[in-house]
Image 1 (tube, helix red, strand yellow):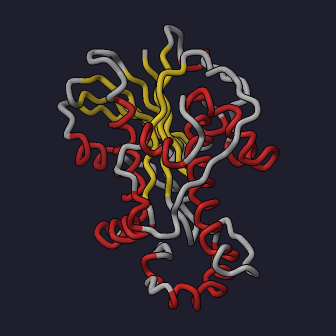
Image 2: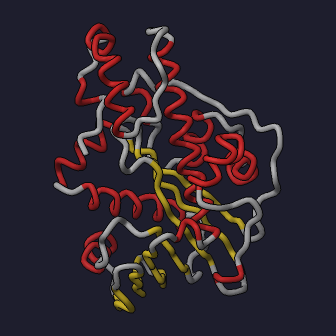
Amino acid sequence: MYYVGTDEAGYGPLLGPLVIAATVFRSDGPRASLAADGVGDSKRVYARRGRAGLAEVLRPCFDCELDLGRLLASHSVRNDPRASYPWYGDARETCTEARVAPDGFHAVRINPMCEQEFNAACAQDGSKGTVLFRETMRVLRGALTTVPEGEEVDVLCDKHGGRRRYGELLMAEWGPSRLVVERESATHSSYRMTADGRSMRVRFLAKADALDPPVSLASMAAKFVRELFMVSLNEFFVSRQADLRPTAGYAVDGRRFLDDVRPLLARLDVPVDSFVRAR
């Protein structure tokens, strides 16, 4: 059985990309038997040990140097978006210690969605939640390309906000030949479907990033890649405005940072709506 977990980082901030990740594990045992030393909710790992703590776990999973360019080239499901964004150059994390990959680990894929694409998608769909679902399915499809045909797949996604019904979205995205609703509740929604010749169980579970190793590892991968984007963003602006304090991009501090760099954005001829997330 192949087990897939998905999660995002950067759904709520004012600045920086939305990054969604998917990880794949293979095991002959049940999903509950999966374990991964050092893997946990990315927010807690990052709060305790910063990027270095994420890097220690992720280095053997990414299987390349931990710089943004290589990660995007090796693991992204979309083209490298940085050419359209002068504030995104390269950034890297030096890993002084690295663990071995978790037992059963198979693959990781990332989906970085930068500001202009995110804003355009929100305007088209009229819903940030719909964008999150579609882009999660994009990275899931990328992860499934690593799974041999005919293998059964169990997918667990960290729940998307308050949504509890995903059936219509799954039908629209996958056009399955069969879809069975197993459960739809405030905390847990579950479906079985056959799509693209593959049998899949797809679930959405609240707090899955703290409960399930594949989802936790996806959470860590998404957080780590978003942090590298933010390192690059901060270096770009701080190098041009020496008194500028860096930002993580979240609402209150993101607005402070935006106010501070408005004159610089004007001098660089960067439209604010290409730099700031619309939702």
